[in-house]
Length: 57
Length: 244
Image 1 (cartoon, each protein chain N blue to C red):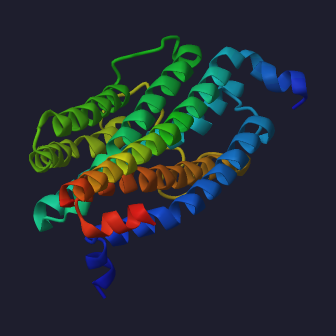
Image 2: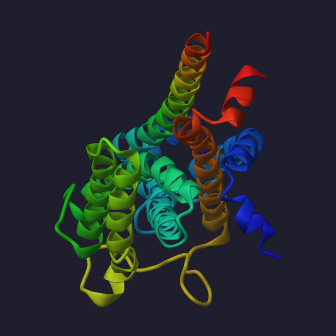
Image 3: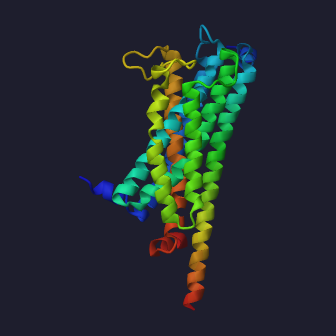
């Protein structure tokens, strides 16, 4: 398949490329949100640790 | 023999294993998805009936398979947590739900985009499409139910119960094309005997499926670490893990 044909997708480009784009978006969102979720959990655990320390004093 | 199973009930063990496996899963997922996309979009021949529109299957089919697989994992983990009272089962179920929901949405959207040029419509109340939409509602219901309770353990139990009951929808999705007259095509790859798809089209598809599976593993590992930290943040081992 040449470069022009690759992007043209036999006339179905407006269906194929948005699907690939949306798939990449969903995968990227999954990674981003999972990472954010983990960072937020770490932050909460750190806060709990700091509170426990201040209560111990 | 069952030592490994009992170890899975231990939050520090699960946290450590998830942290160690995540980079491997992610690296392999990116490799296999990269190969699948390049081979599927650039090198597989066009379908003799659908032309290049068939290439949508390289994201549609893996996401549809994974939507069922993740739900089965979530329901299985919920059942284990309910029966054996293993807290990590609830953590796995909670971590799986948003991943499964997003993959179900992806399957529905890409299926709809494929339906327009092939069926002439974005949506039809076909058994396969309708049961997949019900799956999305089940995911959303499970996540909403878990967060509706102030007491996390009650939310976990209610969500696990709903996910176990909702598991009846998974075989309905799978066999809907066999049990009812459906616009959706019947099984092509997972057919008993020889798959009715050429090897040059099949290998990129299998690579995408493996990639999506590994990707689920990677994201599950990340979310699972977060779930474990949220549930165990008062424990001494979490304090040690956070300090280091």
